[in-house]
Image (cartoon, rainbow, N blue to C red; front, side):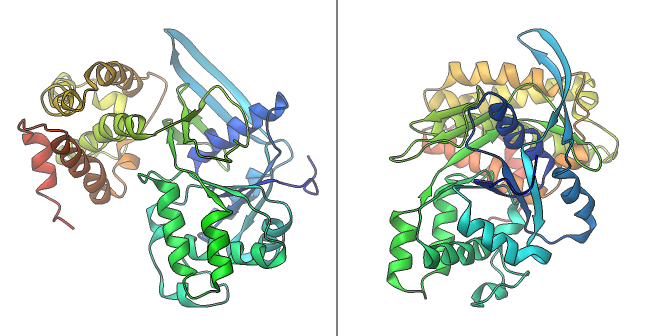
Length: 374
């Protein structure tokens, strides 16, 4: 596919998750004529060590995604090539080109930049682009250029694992735009669509230089609002009235379980080669995980009126954890462990208590007590 073809989708982030999730969805939808068009990927970190990955994402023959696991009791083991990405750029070296694409081609912005990308930086106060700026600051500059050029609206779809991610990103950008004129601020507030969304897929391994191995299960839930049209149609994409219940299930069952496993893995020596499925072959660990869910997590969902749905999701989650094909390394899950305890463990306890859950949670409390409250 020629790089001269306009790309109505601009994606911030080059992670293997995006490669096997959103990029794969768009690729499959394009084959059915159900996507707005191809993608320009932007590496916002400027990490030179990942230049090979960036270049490989837009290779003419695409990059591979291997989908392996169980789906409705049937073994799935297939590989496909993703060709939806036609440009792959870096803010560190391609900023003028990124500005031109953003101003002239883009209808949708998606992002998955990681926690560090949102952290405010001293460079955010500069009026001109600096590579050391945070992701929201870089986005604000691009939006400013678009506003000044023609003011055509667009839709922004963050995929970071942050509750209310669209609202959070909007708040960050508006705060950075507070010193700009009121017309620009009004445009950001009322003409740009900032959508909340939630993603769910285990992407266990990278394929070098680009590509990934993932499970069959996948979800991208997008919260509906007036004027919102999705960039593509796909069986794994849901447009929902509210993300609250889906978000609670994902964060406080699947993600909470991952963080609990990472904590136990650290206590048992942190073998860098150990995967989730291998770790759970230890009967004591698997039973402890089940007991934690049954005695500490399920009561919270019961208090919220979601017990049946939580039990169904938990059964699916345990099958996903034990997927015989996926080598989901605990060393990867344990990255940013303290932040994950805050968001997933302390966050769950607060959520459960807010719904009237008064049960004891000793395993979760022990993890929380290791991390000072913010």
